[in-house]
Length: 399
Image 1 (tube, helix red, strand yellow):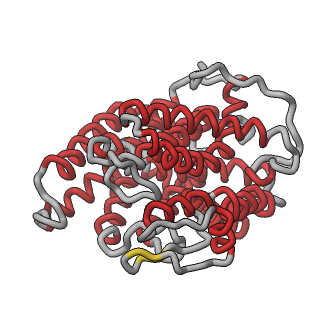
Image 2 (image 1 turned 180 degrees about the horizontal axis):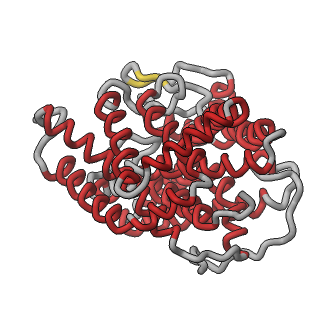
């Protein structure tokens, strides 16, 4: 437990970086989002589908592994410390950081627009005004928007703490039993089967709400993967199996992605026009789960074989990743809405939006990490650490 898993650090950083790209992409696709580009179309959607089935599942699994290491390091004050690091940013984010997202959503989507200004909206936002409605769909305020991940992570952390604290022998025996099942091809089969059962049984009945209390399909996929991370954290045999099976994982991931793209974009089936046969729909859900897990397994397996070093770049990004995550979506929404007036071609505007989101998010982090009272509001320790040399532009990996 004393040796830090640098491969998982890099996976976490890269996954959150991919999340920033994904949210920038949400502005340009036809799927519903807080604000939408006048040029929104289906063009980017196959590329978005390359990560949407597995990206958050991977983050929850890695978070579960980190939870096991943190609990082993400091079990006595674990829950209080994690609650402080997660709930304070969540509450602050809901009251301050997320508000501009809701404001611009109302400006763009409210029939007739909204013209009272941001401060007037903020007052109504904080009071829980539920009158912002369109076609019977009303905005729930205050909201956590992209910070739903933090709320779910805290709840799952409480579950893991309760199990590790009050049933350590059960967790140990379960870990042993699980490690035996995840040997050889089992490391690809059993998690994919669990995800397939969850998707086939629940996704058609419970839409993704990110509202915690009624989000049963998401809980059925994210909580087991989080607990899987907890259980296999120190099981080197499982991690070594993932490394050995990495090429099979990659092959399954590529095949699964090809089928998903065909089903949603090339098959000619459409739930609103020409719905697919039930058998094909169930097959798609099973393949989705296979693609979801095999991609995660491939990422974990390939990263396991890289001899990462604990460099200044890694330490900088490790501290930056959570504040950048908290800030990024608000920055994207504000920039995207206000760029509309310039009529920039999306081929040019898109990369500019990505670069500006990353640049301003890291600029915000640079301010946050230097101000003692701001640090806890973004999930950082109150004490300012020794200066860390910022990485050169574009630096993402170290060997």
